[in-house]
Image (cartoon, rainbow, N blue to C red; front, top):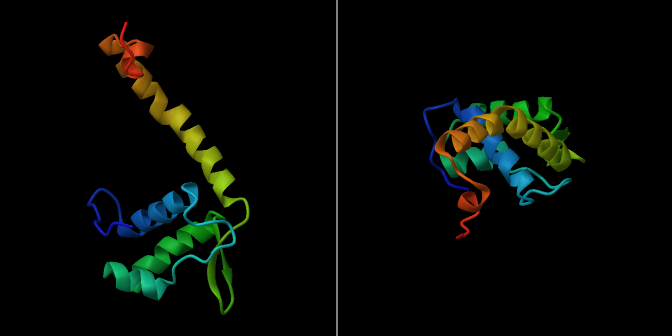
Length: 117
């Protein structure tokens, strides 16, 4: 994982988004342990409380589960739930704006696919 943080959103949400990306990419499988708060905080030189807040967000969303004395683990079904919600968000929020821009620019499918006439 890259260590750069941006100013566009709180770091705890960026932590949440990084773990979500790892789950979606299959780099963190269901049932697999999420890096410990201490190791994550140490690796990226951020406050452990900030990491805990990001992990708490994941837990509240049902994407990770706490196992007493063992740590946090990716919950069963997390990847599919994330895919479904990310697809829905893309289709409902992002795609309409992209589609409008495509139409405004007069682009055709072959333009977008990089195909010549």
